[in-house]
Length: 50
Image (cartoon, rainbow, N blue to C red; front, side, top):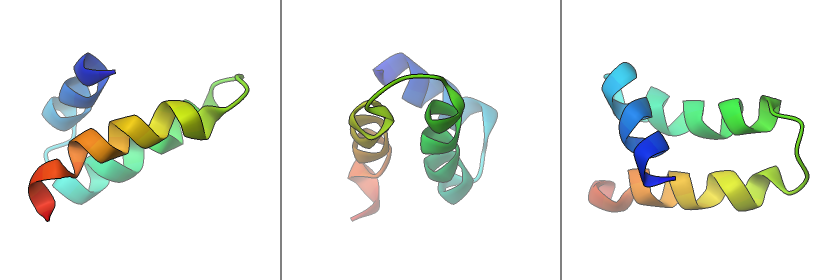
């Protein structure tokens, strides 16, 4: 998940759009418990914003 977070931040230069894009992409995948997958990604992406 860390690699996915880093890739998202490299592709999308705007920090806010990067944070929003991760749950959006995970939500489009056919899987159960998408929030359990995307929440840690959003957490790691927002660590330096507090």
